[in-house]
Amino acid sequence: MGIINCIRCGNVFTTERDTNVCPDCIAKENEDLKKVKEYLRDFPLANAMEVAERTGVSIIQIFKFVKMGSLILTAPVEAFKCRLCGKDVKKGTLCQDCIDKVLELKESAKRKEKEKLKKEFEKKIKKKFKKI
Ligand SMILES: [Zn+2]
Ligand SMILES: [Zn+2]
Image (tube, rainbow, N blue to C red):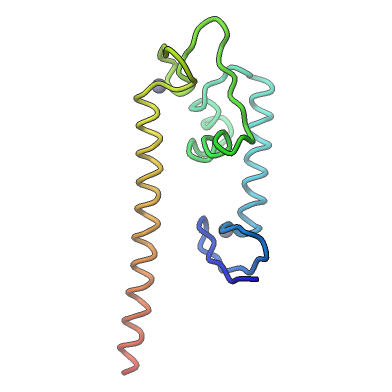
């Protein structure tokens, strides 16, 4: 059993499983997935941007679902179109621009997370020094 800092909300929790997301966030993720799936059942060819807008689930989260295999975006049969911006693509479900955009979003989310951890660490250090 370990004590883990949730990578999503920062809550500290204990778990026996190999996870770094707390049960609250997992429950929220499942709910988001349900929302996205329900929307796609009604609008099977909706692009991810539209799904994010309608369901309130972030694009990053939707792509995480896709990457995990929880969600499958079906490409339109008649032509390959980017599921994000609707631009024609030769293959796959995303154009290169959108792939870059998604990667960039992910990177900036990671960066923010790192900065947060650094700040918290500095705060702790400062507190220690005050005591001395
Ligand atoms: Zn959490
Ligand atoms: Zn695109």
